[in-house]
Image (cartoon, rainbow, N blue to C red; front, side, top):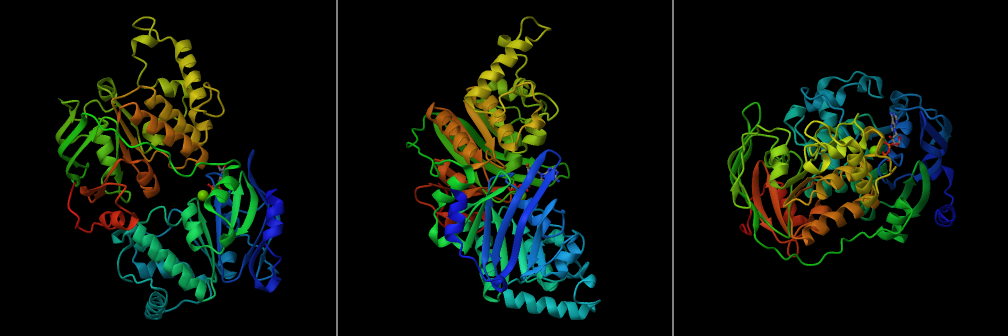
Length: 526
Ligand code: ADP
Ligand code: MG
């Protein structure tokens, strides 16, 4: 069906109007076939989106096009000509530039140094620094990419670092620009700016491939979109002829509810009360500069913000992992902020469950089995103990099996090591472990990072069910969509402070985006 749609909708283009054509690309990593016989045509001067769930094979395909990986089979045509791309230098020579998910800039070099680094082997041979400076200034002006050429990378915001990556590609005269999940690290305003830049590049005849898992971005900026699922290209459609619902279904292989269905909150008593909470990191730098907030029973307080503005520290100190100063009360009882019980154990006994942001390090022990991970932290509970010394492992395994079934963790094998589950299934295991504790307060950070759309729908439902059971939830997420759809109230963090509180019914992305960028609250605090 998907194949028919592809043929039906994508008219065969004349070869010279194509910037890129991939034919029959396949690539395996050991037993994992990341790309299966993929063919795709990208029109010159278009913005072509590639969308797919985590692990669908998007980055692999683009890494092949950029010469980072070699395909096991298949051919690459650039501008209608068969062009082998054995390495990145060949890709650059073919006019391809790539902005990676994780930037590859040298942190203690300046912008100018980074831009010319490695370019001597490109088309501009050994340019003088002055000449390079002029070229950079021209590019910056032409494409709204202003950035101080003498600033050190480490002093730039993430948005500006991204501009440097784009400048670097343009400086090497790229005609084709590949961006891998570029907006994950940006504020909404920065993302808007990036999209303006991309549209400007399209006007100049550049071809852009945009990888994203965000349906909204695809709908907003692309001309054409290709959908990947489990290593295959399942459809290519014109953006104007599709809808987010159709794309979600093509990505997941079944109908997905994109909007969270939720009843109004009925907040009860105050469960968490935080006053003047402060945290310093190991270098003495203040990361939380006096946080005040409350979360009531039956309510989800969502913390919005660009990553790195103190959200992680807030979760860690509330979860008992880090040390803080100030006052935190749970059900009216003052909590110990000394960080002494750094396993978070004492917090759990007090009724706080914690799904940490960094599940790879804080949430799980990757070499341990699923059941050991689910029991982790709770193995001292009476129900699991036959006597003081011996844990009843079979009871723990049985308990894990039940949780895995309820949370649809795949594969449903509790004796498998955590590292053998996909990111989404690891997250489901942790969410199952924490929610099934029936805590008074759930702390949950980036609940759906790296999780596929189907599992996101499921995890969101579980968080709401906990709220509807009268529990308090503190949700931290860098995904504004997630904050907007789950939260009953929203707090925006910037630079270790809360910039303002908002009601999701009366705010929007732009309003939140200003607070996220540190613009002082004009509406006043709630
Ligand atoms: P996406 O970018 O769509 O999230 P990727 O292309 O990164 O997906 O990954 C596709 C599949 O290939 C995943 O199962 C991933 O685990 C696997 N994979 C990607 N890169 C490697 C690698 N270098 N070694 C082993 N497996 C890999
Ligand atoms: Mg990727």
